[in-house]
Length: 570
Ligand SMILES: Cc1cc2nc3c(=O)[nH]c(=O)nc-3n(C[C@H](O)[C@H](O)[C@H](O)COP(=O)(O)OP(=O)(O)OC[C@H]3O[C@@H](n4cnc5c(N)ncnc54)[C@H](O)[C@@H]3O)c2cc1C
Ligand SMILES: NC(=O)c1ccc[n+]([C@@H]2O[C@H](COP(=O)([O-])OP(=O)(O)OC[C@H]3O[C@@H](n4cnc5c(N)ncnc54)[C@H](OP(=O)(O)O)[C@@H]3O)[C@@H](O)[C@H]2O)c1
Image 1 (cartoon, rainbow, N blue to C red):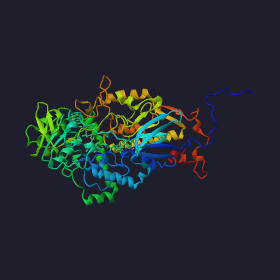
Image 2: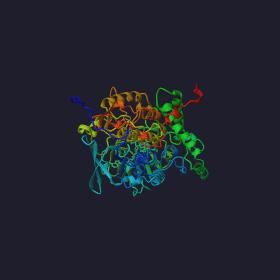
Image 3: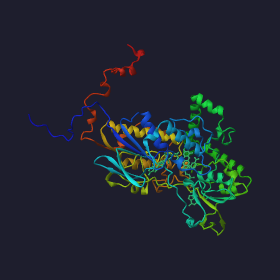
Image 4: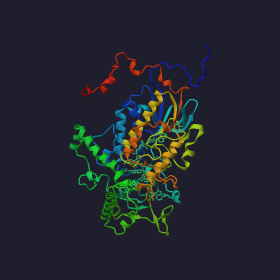
C-alpha cells in the first residue's frame, strides 16, 4: 500500500463529543453597570463559571463606576429611574421619579451584594497595559496595585470602562493661576464648601445645569458661563409625572408596596417608560419620520422656556438655541430656569478671555471676582482605552483611533483579537434609549462569541478591517440623517468630518432595536477572521457523538415533539 498523500488538514483525532467546550479565562476592566452585567450573565444567566475563569479589575475601591466617581451637588438621573434599571435586577422602591446619584450608587452596591458579584472583582487594581500574544492567543495584562505591577493573562479581554471617565478641564488661559478651589463635576472635592461663596460655573451640559441649580441655593452669588445655548427641555417623560408638568415626585409607600407585591405592575410601569424612551429615535431624532411631532416638540420647548424665564427679559435670547432639539442631549434640570432668575444668579454668554488669580475676565475686558470656579466641561472623548494596548502585529490602539475611532457595532475593533468593548466603544448607543438594555444585549453578544470560541476550537476571532471600514462609512449615512448631525457643539462629534463622515463618533446610528437585531439575529461570521487551535477547523466535530448521546437517560427523540402535528395526520 502506498503512502497517503499529504494533507495540510491532517490532525490528531479529538475523542470528545461535538462542540465540547474548553475552559478559558476572561478578564473584564471596570465594575460599573457594564462589568456587573457581564458578571451576572456569566455567573447566573449562563452558569458558565465552570468554564470561564472570570475576573474584573477595578481601579476604584468599590463598584458603581459613573455613580461612584460623580458626586457633585445636584447629581441626578434626569430620565425616570424605572427606565434606568438593570433589566435583571429591578428595584421596586425607588424614592423619586428622577433619582439622585447617591441612591443609584446604593442600588449598584445592593445588586453587587445580593448576587455576590464582588467575589469576582479585584478593587484598587488599575489596568495599565495589554498586549496581544499571537503565539498563545492570549492578552498579556499589566495591572497596577499598591504601587506594584501585577501580571495576568486571558483568552478573552473585555473593556467596560465607560465613556465618561476622564474629566476634561476647560482650556482657558490662567485657570491654574486661580487662587481659590477649581472643582470639576467629574472629580468633585466633597470637602470644598460652596456655601456663602461667589461661584462661577462654566459649561451647561447636563452636569452644568444640575450643579448650578444645586449651588445657587446657598451661594452669595453665582454666574453661569455658557458657550452655547441649549434646550432646557421639559423633563424626560414628564407626561408620567404627577401633574404632567415634569416636576420630580416621591413614590408613596403604597406605590412602592404595590410594586413589590405585584411585580407584574412594576413590569408594566417599566415597559411604559422603556417603550416611550425607545420611540424617541423615530419621533425626534431620525430626519425621515414624524415631521409634525418634531415641529410641535420644538414649538412646545420654545414656549415653555419663554414662559419659564418671563421674569428676566433677555434671558430667553441667550438660552434659546437655533439648532434642532436633540442635536445635543436635552438638558432638563428641574428648577434650573427658576434658579437663574433668583437675585443671586446671573448668566453670561460672552466668551471667557482668561481666568485671573481672583476671578474671570471676559472678552471686552469686564472682570469679576470669585471664591470658587466650577468647571462642568465634560469628559475626554477619544474612545481610546485608558491603558497602553497593542493588538495583532503590534498595532497600537492609540494609533488606530488617532484619526477616527472606528469599531464594529461599538464592540469589536480591527487588529484587537478576542477583545470586546462593552459600553465604551465608538458609536455606542449612549442616547438612543435605555442604556442599560443596550448594555445587557451587548454582554449577551460577548457571551455568544465566547461560547463559539470555546466550543469550536477557535484560537482567535477578529473583526475584518474592510468590514469595519464599510460599516463605518455606511453608519455615517444614517447619522447624516439625524438631529445629531445639525449645527451644534456636542461631544458626540469628536471624529473627522470629511466627504464621507459627519464627525459623529460617539453615538449608535439607529434605534435601540436596530442594535438589538444586529446583535441577536445573526452573528455575521463573514465579518470576522478566525484562527484555530489546530490545522483543521473542523476538529470540534470530535468523535462523532453529540453531547446528548452521552447520557443514556436522555430522550433521543425529543426533536419529534417540535414537529409533531396531529392535525396533519394522513
Ligand atoms: C454625571 C453623569 C450622569 C449620567 N447620567 C446618566 C443617566 O441619567 N442616564 C443614562 O442613561 N446615562 C447616564 N450617564 C452615562 C453613564 O455613564 C452610563 O449610563 C453608565 O453608568 C455607564 O456604565 P459603565 O459600566 O459602562 O461605565 P462606568 O460607570 O463609567 O464604569 C466604568 C468603570 O471602569 C473603571 N475603570 C476605568 N478605567 C480603568 C482602568 N484603567 N483600570 C481599572 N478600572 C478602570 C472605572 O473606575 C469604573 O468603575 C451619566 C454619565 C455621567 C458622567
Ligand atoms: N442624565 C443625567 O442626569 C446626566 C447628568 C449629568 C451628566 N450626564 C451625562 O454625562 C455626560 C457628560 O455631561 P457633562 O454635562 O458633564 O458634559 P458635556 O455634555 O460634554 O457638556 C460640557 C459643557 O462644557 C462646555 N465647555 C466645554 N469646554 C469648555 C470651555 N473650554 N469653555 C467653556 N465651556 C466649555 C460645553 O460647551 P459647548 O456646548 O459650547 O461645547 C458644554 O456646555 C453626558 O453624556 C451627559 O448626558 C447625564
